[in-house]
Structures are given as C-alpha cells and as structure tokens.
Image (cartoon, rainbow, N blue to C red; front, side, top):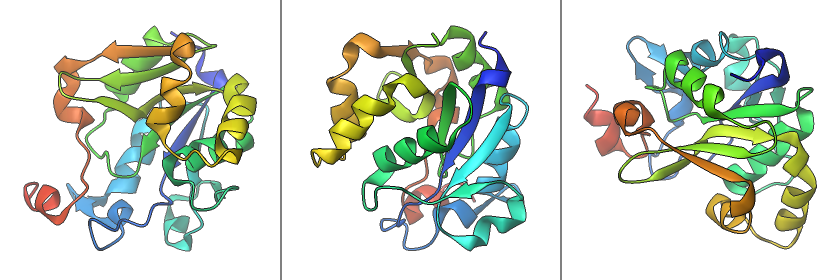
Length: 189
C-alpha cells in the first residue's frame, strides 16, 4: 500500500449538477450530505483532504477549499486544481456524487496503485476515472491537454494509457455507483 503521508484526498464538487437540478453534494443519504460521507471516507486513508469547489456551502466540512484554476473544464479541471494545490505526490479523487464508496474500497485501490501511474476503478460495465489515484507528476501533461481545449477525462486517459492502471473491482460495483439524476436519487429512498 502507498504511504498515506503522500496522498491527498480530493473531493470534486465544482460541477453544475445540471442533470440533477440541484447541488448533488448536498443531497442526503443515511442522514448526511453526500459530500460529508465522502470526506469521512477519505480522512482515514489520506493525510489531507481538500474540496475542489468555489461554493461556500461546504464550509461546514472545515476542509481547505480550492476553486478550479481553469474554469469550465469539468472534472478534468478539478483534477488539475487538486494536483496543483496538493502538497503530496498523489491525490485520491472522488466526485461528490459517489456516497457509497467506503474507506475499505479506497484502501483497496491504494494497495494496488503505483506511485507514478494513474490508477482508476472499473466494474463490468464502466471505468470510473473519478474514483482513483492521480500522481502529481502528470501535471505538466494535464496542463498541456487542457490548454489545447481538451476537457474530457476519458480523452486524457486515452492518450496516457502507458501511465494508466485500471483495477477490476466488480466486487465493489455497488460502491462505484454515482448519483446523477433525480431518478437515481429517488431509488435511494
């Protein structure tokens, strides 16, 4: 397992939640906002936890918050901001709509991650690039990708397959789900 002293947990919470129609990070599951579940999941597995967002509604978490450096760049811009602000050599990324991820899953991914490679989760249906480890040494390549107008996480990963490890975590498939729509959220209740 990677040394947690070298890992910053980064919660991506800067999205517009357009499919949901309201801020996904503040939706409740088991009596707490999604973003609080995610912070509590990351804290035992990472030396620091930060929030990538310019919304002040998350102040109750008492975590450092950073806005996107490159605006309107989507989750890839959030990863860029997290890597830029992290004081560690790696970040563990979780998007704000993944309240089912447990610390055990984070630790499983960290146990298989390589310090110089991107390591993301995958199940039988999908890869999950917003559940995984990104090393700080990709920052220059990420800068270049974004400065060329490329905003897709999948596009970035496609061009960097030599630095990508995809972990088959189908046994954790129920934790890899994200909540994007009101229908997804209604199924929780």
